[in-house]
Image (cartoon, rainbow, N blue to C red; front, side, top):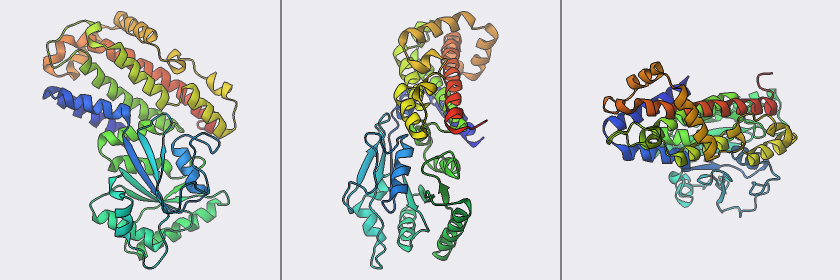
Length: 379
């Protein structure tokens, strides 16, 4: 529900921008969501669990090009950056291990590795947080940055019981170090749909600025049906923004679908949706490698043409079809939801909204089938 409300809040923000004639704000919001400019730092010992976590956040396995490895190829005191192969502006930064030396200075570590420039900082460990890692957390928080988190990474040897013991011990350490209301998120690096990762994602998105939270959601691989739903809601907010911009709603309205819809923009949005929902060939091949499945089985689940290929001809076909099907009643509902001065183009707006939202629903249905196959979710 929180994620649905977040999408609705974004939609209300976009509508307010239209009312105030702040078209540039809508354009900036749309570009931010499409480009996904995000930098997340991951601090902690460079071990197999951390490397796998970095790979899973980018939808990669250890065999994929550009994957993180253990031992790390970076020098112990050097940063290592891992861009997302299909969302290049979403970058994960592997920060060097936090020293256990009693003379360690958190302020020096933060300054040396420019920790404050990242959108979020994740402090990882496999047993319990060290005193020095807590010092880093405390120093970051003292500089008025809220997006810093403790994540306990499960190892292949861990059982449900050992993980419970480790989490309890970690919370005790944080309490002993004076951390108020301590939180530790338990994450299975090889399967993010398990344990606490979805809860962690919800908390992190709640702490990030709204647009950044949506950008993070769209850049992550799709490994849960709840993520499919959240991504669909985010794209529908994006469609609303694109429809508003297409015909220059704030200017003189021209009641023609062609003036409201720039097919190139529509293709761009749906291409982003295809990639974000992990429906493109490359993403499905990576998913198959991760889960030990035949790529052909995943590809065969795609029944929507746009899940296979986003083409301008298919987008135009859907727009033409929506034009024929749009009813007066539907148009009236959209009129009530639009700024007063833009209602004369409500039919064109409705056609745009109906065509692209239906496309996103169809692609989302394919994504849910893929998730069910790779995780067994819903079975």
